[in-house]
Image (cartoon, rainbow, N blue to C red; front, side, top):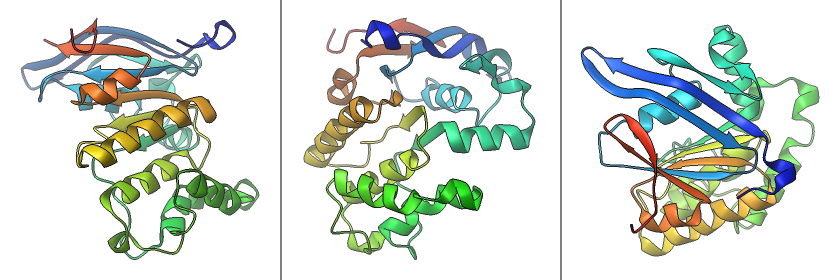
Length: 232
């Protein structure tokens, strides 16, 4: 768990519900995530894990309830304000890396910085190079995705999610497309970045091995979240 001096709540969800047509996917979900904490969300396929992650990250508005980050309610922002907030405060990693095939690893990492002002972009390339080097890709900066392995592409995607220094990292099945060894390496990387970068992390996963690396594991079943012990 986070140290006492970093245990302030960063993300707060209250009464979250999501209904698609007549199907209730999420119901009355309350969740607090502390600054610097790492949380895994597990559950059967189709239970709404990705929907919950999208709501927590402001990619989707819930049918009911609210999400606040650092006391700022996401639903109270205009679309432009929310887009800017997501770009600067929240990083996303998905099962598919979504790298642009025509761009190098370094160029892919720098894409989220392009919407910022010139002053804000200063130092971005140096940070990108340092982050790529820290995840073992210092000699792959100019390589395009077709010249990288699946695990390497996913590491580039993680660095891209971190380039703007977000406070919250959301990962949706980040190891789902990787073999066992590459998945383990990515899991180790996420834990290391959680500690080294101080980024709060919420990971949706089917992998008990990845969930076990997180400080806390929650299970989503029947639209509700419950505390869960991996392997229990």
